Length: 281
Ligand SMILES: [Zn+2]
View 1 (cartoon, protein in one colour):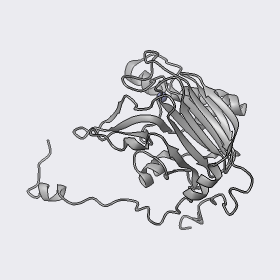
View 2 (view 1 turned 90 degrees about the horizontal axis):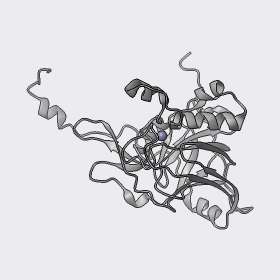
View 3 (view 1 turned 180 degrees about the horizontal axis):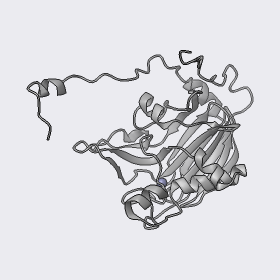
């Protein structure tokens, strides 16, 4: 035990400040996106099998809808710039900017040195959930992705259908890379439909049964050309456990919708970050 100073309560009582006030962030033009979504046409579709992953390309200005189809199921999403795998989703900075969970109007930001919006959440049928009494919410950008290494560390054995491995196989299949080449590109995910938070007493990461039901979806507007890779987590709705074959698992559907011609007039893809990258030299 450490020694508590006399002014401990006063120090704890200091009000927090938001690390990254977002008032100066560029605001997505949601009415423009809504105009583009109206009448948009389904152009591509992938059904992701349970305990497996699938990949789909989403051209800039198109919409990616990810849906629960047969039962409550959580997904682990990786996003890449389609033509440059080094530009990938940056969950930590997205969390710093938008909070631990994302919903309509929030953006998925890319890694350094790019740091630009890759996608904007256009619609979220679980937006009603908010933050529950345990501090839990959905679509988390906290968790990393279930993986066979942590599983091995905690309980031994080799489990091959964690999201990390599913994403690795799907990325390799889509790009023609070997598993060894593809694996380093797999990164921390956006946990689609996953309901998570931190316990108030110990600060531990928790999960609970996802409120997602058949027909629920999260839809993204692609700000740049994207390669999206989605794993149907072996945890199913993540009510109890992952990294095993115990939970009931269901497929997830990815659909790409193209806007009608002219509907995005006046819109431009975000440029990569303007920092000059001289780092003081
Ligand atoms: Zn998983």
